Length: 317
Image (cartoon, rainbow, N blue to C red; front, side, top):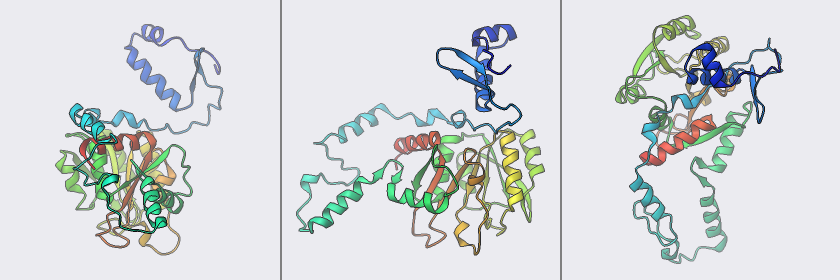
């Protein structure tokens, strides 16, 4: 009954004759669905909410993190700590110590502005740029719980996601045909790709569900707008159907949306806007202006962004 207190995890495991870790995972799933709640000092209780209004579970990104890849060598950590010291001179980055910078006789305002902009840089990127991206692309997405990682293009974003979310032998699903130049990134990591046929509206949702039931699919990689190489744009109805299937099977989605700004008229809502906690969004300026402009962005839930930043520190920028 709503409000009723549940037995302790150990007692539940003993009563059901199952491993305690199974009980822990089951309770976490029930919490994500909003069916139970934990109160500090009084244990776990059946939620008081409306049971008929079942909400999709928030995807547990941490279950995908390949943590062994993110361990930093203690020696590298020691070197970084030494370089962070005030008297340290990091020759690797090519940055001069401030007391070694010659007097260029720049106007004071100009130099102050340069130093101010330098302070805007964060581990996830240039703060004013991140703000502009959110304002332009994601006005309909609550910023709470989401963050942006600035990348050197969408290809680099895919690379970092592969390092954090996948391991050799994993299988992902994608459109058939798919973007030729993104596929080697997965293959180089030993990732198996399964193609899903498309019609004019997008990938076949029934085929996707059948594939999920047959294979252990780790994620779905899609290019919904002006899909490369077919040029198709996925319909709104199909986008919603894909979200429904992926939420049902707890399958994360990578939305590679580098072509979205090339269209005319009103654009369709992104997969990210339809399911912010289920979708990782990739964008880039290279398809809009020039391939030589290596500026991209990755929008994802905070836990994933933090793990990606950790990976960047480990492997180098």
